[in-house]
Length: 253
Image 1 (cartoon, helix red, strand yellow):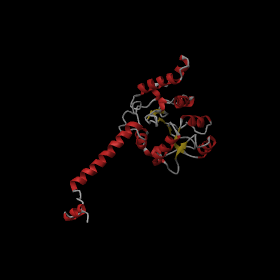
Image 2 (cartoon, rainbow, N blue to C red):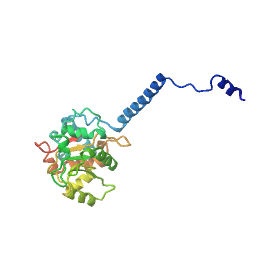
Image 3 (spheres, rainbow, N blue to C red):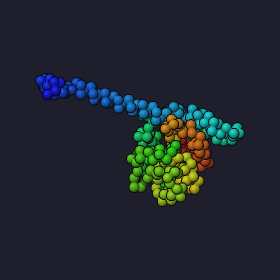
Image 4 (cartoon, rainbow, N blue to C red):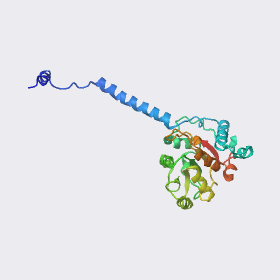
């Protein structure tokens, strides 16, 4: 018989079980590690610097981004592209992290009547809320986060250019009561230009401005997205609604 095994048997031959205190410490370590992971993820997946600006600062930030994205534009052209302070809604009172899972709470806080309004739709293809995202994947993610507002009479529409043909989105909007539309800037603009997405009842245009992609860029740092975003926000049918009572405002999430 092996001497080592013999000695183990002489001492009982069983491994010592951890006591209750050690189990508690182990559970705490696991929870601590999970919390640290969430904190790290929050730091890398969102940047709330812009979202926490008041309307005056937002107007200034958008102006700076426009200058950067359109370096060859004249002073007159730039001035026509700037969004007035009255375009923006102050959302600095929102205290939760601006992650996708908190978007429903964000919308409820800044809508007129909360969930009841967000779960309703006046007419086909005429949403009260548009969410502007930076990619098809992000569009799909936020659409899932907003399922709480999906009802038989009011849908949350996923408008993705990469995997859906424009004509399919047009047909869907024309036959569906949509309360919330989620999509990238150019796809949303194309649908408005095609009169498939109407703005008659539009109240909130939410720019998903805190989300960072895998390269740690927000929508403000991607010229290929910021340019179409500004084309969208500067459409005449939207600009004439900014700041008017009962009409649309831009909110940065």
